[in-house]
Image (cartoon, rainbow, N blue to C red; front, side, top):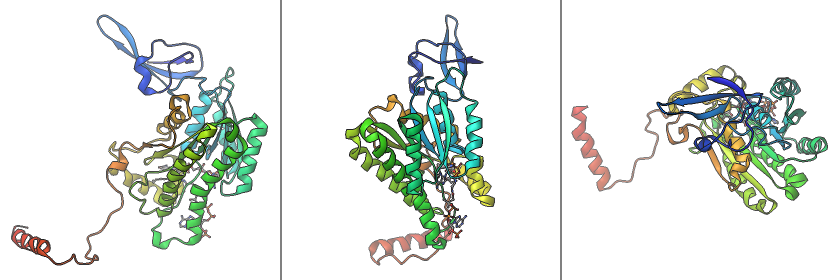
Length: 347
Ligand SMILES: CCC/C=C/C(=O)SCCNC(=O)CCNC(=O)[C@H](O)C(C)(C)COP(=O)([O-])OP(=O)([O-])OC[C@H]1O[C@@H](n2cnc3c(N)ncnc32)[C@H](O)[C@@H]1OP(=O)([O-])[O-]
Ligand SMILES: NC(=O)C1=CN([C@@H]2O[C@H](COP(=O)(O)OP(=O)(O)OC[C@H]3O[C@@H](n4cnc5c(N)ncnc54)[C@H](OP(=O)(O)O)[C@@H]3O)[C@@H](O)[C@H]2O)C=CC1
């Protein structure tokens, strides 16, 4: 059953709390699905999920967020969810056309009674002066910055041996240094004195990132940066956490890899315990949770949102080879040779 509601009052923090929700509050504008459990003696609302957000509408009213890369893919889903929660969102990236198109589209999500707004600002996070301008412009516009989502970034696919220094640096400068610059500027200009919450998007780089080693190195560094800043900035009331997505499909993510895009995404599916790709709308609730008061005691943490992918298989195939040095001679190597001799006739 689908209906239209505005969720107000207490209750809608995240899915885990749904079963303790006592009442449903009706109004007008956020589309939700209600699952109704009917038994012989009672009819009860089992749980309710907003199409755009599972959180309480108005949770981020009058708050201000910067989302880098907020015009596409995961960043766009985060922006949409923040807007539905009443937040003023500034989206920032390099391509003005994309930014403006997304701002136009996403502004349709804002109901006339909402205090939310969306602003598009061009910024290359690799450029220190552009990051400084982004933060200054946001403060001029809204007078505060409560949240920063470092989502802008990316990489190209290449064996490490073929990477030029320029290509390596482009990825490190974007994913690591860009994230650092955004954190530092937002902290210095606002959060140092007023607190706030930061989420850094990293990746499933727990077993390395073969085929995209530059991004694996950068994301692992951002995870460590997150921990350092969680300690250094705790006394300012700043919480900072990371979200590590698994393989998340979006049109723009696929296009980034050009003709390899469909192959890269298709190859990942067997390695995902869910046996399907993830979607940006499956990342944004984790980000909103970490920004929200529901995460008030969480800092320096990483939330994997990958359906268990990081615990499972790798897309990187290692062909059979004899390139490794022989093991040291001894009784165990001898025993192995004997075992192989006995097994061989049966193979
Ligand atoms: C599915 C798996 C999980 C998915 C994870 C995701 O993140 S999905 C999200 C995916 N979304 C994104 O990743 C979105 C954002 N990504 C990007 O903007 C780019 O991928 C970027 C980070 C490389 C920056 O690029 P840019 O053009 O602004 O950078 P630039 O002009 O400053 O220097 C570029 C230098 O880097 C090199 N090089 C670049 N491309 C290739 C290549 N294909 N081949 C080889 N090399 C390449 C080359 O050396 C080049 O210099 P050259 O030889 O031209 O003088
Ligand atoms: N999709 C996936 O499977 C995974 C994605 N990630 C990461 O999540 C983030 C979002 O990716 P996704 O939505 O999938 O892919 P997209 O390609 O849609 O998003 C990347 C975004 O980053 C922006 N961006 C790139 N470089 C810069 C820069 N120098 N300055 C400012 N903005 C920049 C891009 O905008 P513009 O080009 O206009 O600058 C774009 O909006 C990225 O950091 C990505 O690497 C992590 C793990 C898995």
